[in-house]
Image 1: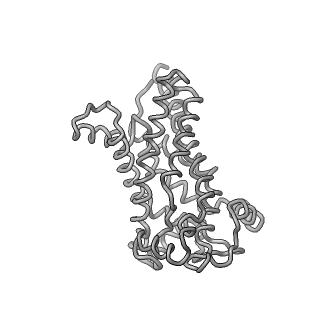
Image 2: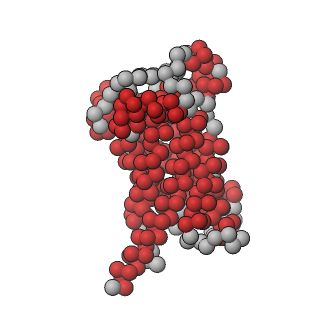
Image 3: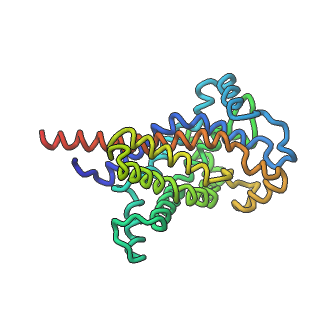
Amino acid sequence: MAKLSTFEGFVCGGLAGCTAVTFSNPAEVAKTRMQLQGELMRRGGVKVYSNVFDALIKTWRNEGLRGVQRGLGPAYVYQLPRKVLLNGSRLGFYEPSRRWLNKMLGYSPTQQTTLTSMSAGSISTVIGSCLGNPLFLVKTRMQAYSPVLPVGAQRYYKHAFHALSTIIREEGLRGLLRGIDAACFRGAIGGSVQLPSYLWAKQLLVSHGVAAPDSMVTYLLSSSIAGVVLPTVQGPDGRMIGTLYKNPFDCLWKTFKTEGLYGWYKGSTAHFLRIAPHTIITLTANDLIIRSYTYLKSRSHRD
């Protein structure tokens, strides 16, 4: 197999992320709107959406395909700085971080340990969260917008570039960094388990002879395990920090004080319906795309 450059790995990872987000974006639209309805209101205020399926049905009925796929453009671009960090064991920041941590702690560079694997996953995802935060902010605001059933603060943007220019003009460059602390905190938790659990599951399946290293069965089973683990450990899916909240902890406290424990977990079902398929498709597609690309590259070199 031909060896991939970092740039080629970046592109393969980005394509895998875009493939996944195409299918998971409607659930994230529902999640965002359910989290915003009744924000800082006693007993959650009047519910526009009763559950994730109600949110999807009402959005489709009133806004069509464009409604359920709001924010898809910035979601695609958002994948690029993040998915380069999740390119498996060969590429991206994950493996160099893991090897460096192994060296610092006296382990062999190739040795898989829980501590360094989880730490490397957190470091990689935090870097991706920082790089992608402006697009995540734009994506969230565009997903929240509804011309028919508005919930929370409504901001209309024609497209991602219009959103970015509007935010810079009205809120300054600092406006693009809203929620970056919450994004890093959440990313550190998720990153510590997503890729390590996938690689661990993959290694376990292969070592016990359940499936071959490069089989579709291995990809699907490993990514499914990671897809269940990730939303389980992430817990409350924090909202973007804006003028209502000073920081993530202020957001958690105010939400709990006004809405109760339920406020922390609004949209949890939608979050699971988004993150589980997204993780499965991303990790499976990433391996398949890299495998297909390296095969075609090897053939072209032989020819």
